[in-house]
Image (cartoon, rainbow, N blue to C red; front, side, top):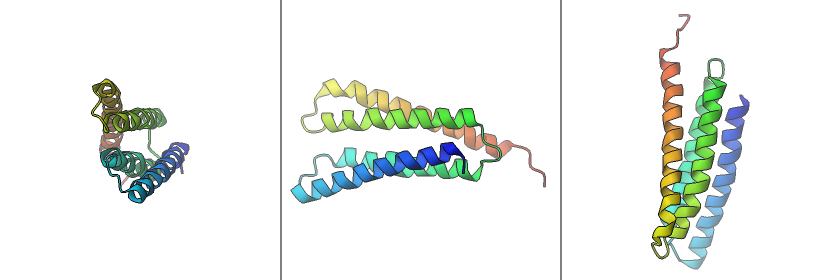
Length: 129
């Protein structure tokens, strides 16, 4: 498995542990105010990271390490910026946290665009048979 795949899974596990703990806390207090941020953490932090990591593991022979690591950096920073900003925004809809949400969204979408380049590179690469 390429190191970048392991990095996606390692970070994804951290985000999943945080998301599960947060979900348990919400269930225990019966306060679901943070549900949107919790859902984004689980989907972007665990599911998306796992999909990226799996793709790069499956295409290890032809992947572009540079693109893969750029994908990792953008995704990691995007989630790390967006989720806390969203969590701070939600309780009182405090607009001063909206720029953090926007920056996180832009980084996350940028990571998806880099991933799309990797996917389409794999689609069009020459095959032996």
